Amino acid sequence: MKIGIYALAKNEAANVPAWESSCREADVRVVTDTGSSDATVELLEAAGVTVARGAPIPWRWDDAHNLSLYHLPADVDVCIRLDLDEVLDPGWRDALEAAWTPQTTKLRYWYQWSTDVRFLSDRIHTRGGYRWVGATHEGLARWSGEEVQTTTEALTIRHHRQPGKQHKSDLTLLRQAVRENPLDVRMHWYLARELDYARDAEAVEAFERYLRMPGGAATERAYAYRALARLQPDRVKPRLLEAIQAAPQEPEAFLAFAEMAEQMGDWVSALYYARHAAFCPPANQSHASDPRAYGPRAPELACVAASRLGLDGEALKHAREAFRRDSANPIFAGNLALLEKKATESGPKVA
Image 1 (spheres, rainbow, N blue to C red):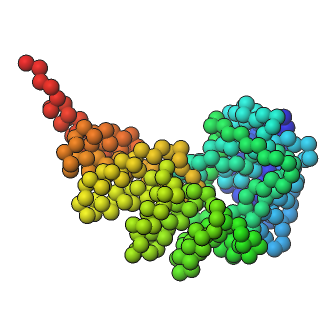
Image 2: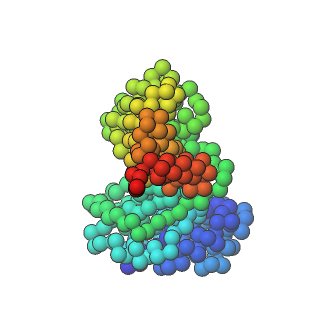
């Protein structure tokens, strides 16, 4: 199996050492430099990486990544798009070769976006039959032959984005992507999200327009409902209920309901919703997740609510989970110690 790594680069000198070190087991590594003015090219070439040069005009991400892909030799079997701010975990090649089958055309693997967010991604694919589509937030499209996806949990790519780094052209390119394909529900979602990031009043209509469209990933539809719950204060509850209906396996809307119940002193409802939020496994995370919902807040709130209702046994269970998720927090450590002591003192007495 011949494996090729491809990437775009512009002024990524600071990321080159970690990037190239992580992917040395590849048979071919080609980086398309789009106009660096720092030492990116020199560092890559010194590490034995092939550097091509070029950039689409006007700029758009799908054309740029397709150019980068086309710079890989035609005899490459498996391609990995590995951006310069990403690294492969050790053992990646063995994991890939173990998971890949003769029928596989695309491999899904764990993508660690940040310390708190991890989800399955799909930027490992065959050399032929795929192209990138979308002016920004581009996705892989299978244009030739049947797609067969395989999943492995043994391979992880980690993202190390520089703080404050932004693609200032995203909103312009998203508007262009929607103009080009007005039926692309995914691009409508990204456009609505970007408008919301920009605090543009158009975001509400953009989310509602997206939700009127058929299709769309459940996690993205739930995100849209949660965003509308925040942007439409008079419709918070129905919007959150719609979010739960769209993605009942995700904790964000459950946690929002639990926190509203906490503010009203409704501990029965707070416990009910916090339980649901706390029981959602981290494997449910996606690119649309709020990492806070997968942290200690849900079990902590469930612990408080259970204590208020006199359910000390259940409170202890949730206290343990909150501490497990954040063992450095002295409040969680104190709560756990207090409840464990209470459980010991109230246990059966031996004469």
